[in-house]
Image 1 (cartoon, one colour):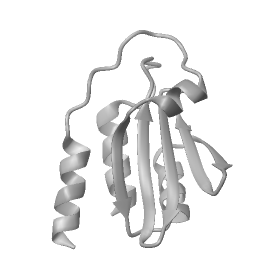
Image 2: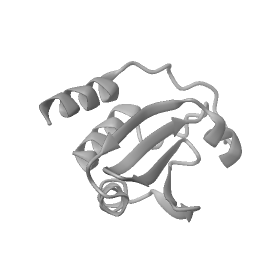
Image 3: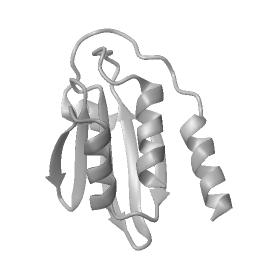
Image 4: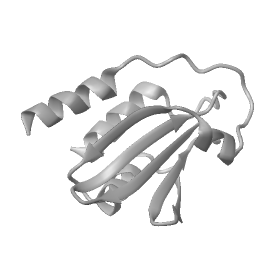
Length: 116
C-alpha cells in the first residue's frame, strides 16, 4: 500500500504546464485534452465524488455512460471517475482557459485527499 501511495503522490506532484489564455473551453475539447492526473484509487467512484463535492462545492456533477464527471470552474477542470475492479480510475483534464476558479494546487490536494 505504501508503494501505491508513493506512486500516487508522485503523480499528484508532477509538474504541469501553466494555464494560458482566458475564455471558455467546450466539453468535447476539454475531454480531448491530455490528463493532468491519471491514477487508480481503492475507493469507489461514488465516495470520491461525494468527497470532491464537499471539498469543491462549485463542482457540477453528471453521469456519463457509467462514469461520473465533475466540471470544476467554468470549464477549467474535468474530473472523470470510472469504476474499476479495484475501486476507481480518476482522470483530471485541464482546459487552456484560466477562469480564476479553483487553482491547480488546491485541486491536486482535493484529489489526493479524496482518493486515499
